[in-house]
Image (tube, rainbow, N blue to C red; front, top):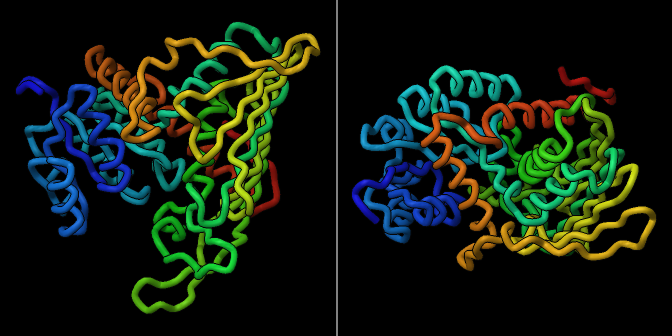
Length: 369
């Protein structure tokens, strides 16, 4: 590291410590400070991660004049507040998903990013996984012809990786955390559904209509203070159907409350061919593979170009994709732009999340302007 490196402050010490801090460091940044509202956690994370300073007040960190950027890796509820403060203090911003609590919040974040001219991106790093990037390239090359339909499913086991509060069969209810509170932006739709929605927009363009349904099949939680049984306020399962302004449709069925887990399966079908992809867990692998078929032939593996797997990072399976996202963030700062996925993409994704919830509440199809 040299003294000329850009300097960043990281808000949040969960995913922030696991991915943001090592990811930014590997791409040339000095992590100058971190934030957690819990002093014990903040101090422990700073020591463990080798970060020289910590704060328990996010705005004190944001207002520091020795930082170039802020990475927001907290739970969703304060994203709006923190992003606006960071942008208005002249910082570039990389914000985690789910981006906001509503499309109205997301729209204001989008607008302030445009007004300030700062580089502002959302951490939908899975666009950079080989599997999703290769599907995008094949679609753009006309492999399937005219897009017609995409089907997606994601089934994670109770209490397994990515289970978001599920529990093993016969096991005790998990603790009540922010992920089970509506006011904190919890719920499986936002937690992982947002990544898939961003992927669909990346492949097929903007969404025109949304029909969706949310369910909570495992509502029982344990209050951490009293030990009492309480109820989750958020979804652990959902379905949706989207139509796209450029034509075609997509469906998804997803649950974190099933046994056994089956990971994800994605099929993309068009007038001339089909693409098929699987992933074993909640996130696409850094060496994911796809299969394809044209003209009615059986599915066959399609080799992944080496350029889509430029390196591996054994510290965390999400780090390769995240580091590629940070490289785009760096280029954006250099060029004075906000590469995709940016705050416009984040707003569009939030519109779809809101529409799924509205459709579930009303039983109606929701049109997005």
